[in-house]
Amino acid sequence: MPRLIRLDTILEDWHPLSNTPALEYVPTRWDGPQVGKRLTEAFRTLSRLPMNDHPRPFGTCWPEYMRDWSDELAILTGELSDLEATARAQNRVRILPSAAEISRMESAISWPGTYLAARPILARVVQIVAMHRSREKDLNWVACKLRLASHVLRARNRTGLDLIAAGLRRDGVPVL
Image 1 (cartoon, rainbow, N blue to C red):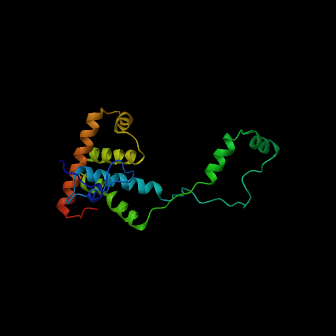
Image 2 (cartoon, rainbow, N blue to C red; image 1 turned 120 degrees about the vertical axis):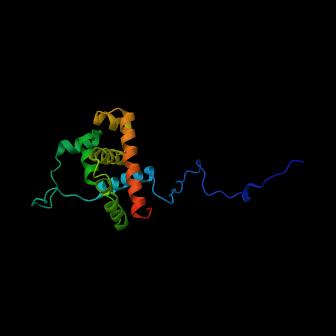
Image 3 (cartoon, rainbow, N blue to C red; image 1 turned 180 degrees about the horizontal axis):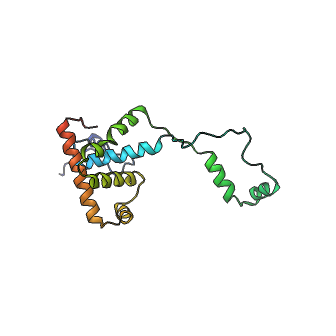
């Protein structure tokens, strides 16, 4: 007689088909991929910060334009391309990062300058790759943008990340 296993007694923390995010694996010591992940997260946090390049000009509380009969007609007929784009821009919500995310960003964003000061080409490559990865760009796209072969870009990025990880381990920085 075959032995039956009750499914309700099997405990699993996570399954790839369960539509829930996996728990993040945090290594016990710094390695290159973990440094790259934290740098990408730092640039993503930096992009979420509110930045005003110039002070807001004086103005009124009135809307930028007044709707006339042609705008109302466009709403009724379904020609909403410009009006929908304007409405989306006005109703945009910006989710600001928390203080913990900002402090992690401030510490991580200085790593290439600190640990790759003697190798400025690697520092530049690591920062550019992390910035574009935070914007969901592919590494091949970044290689084309920098006019490098993709294997050269990968090698330089990995070398820079490994040097940063070695410096973090040497300085005793705890893994975030």
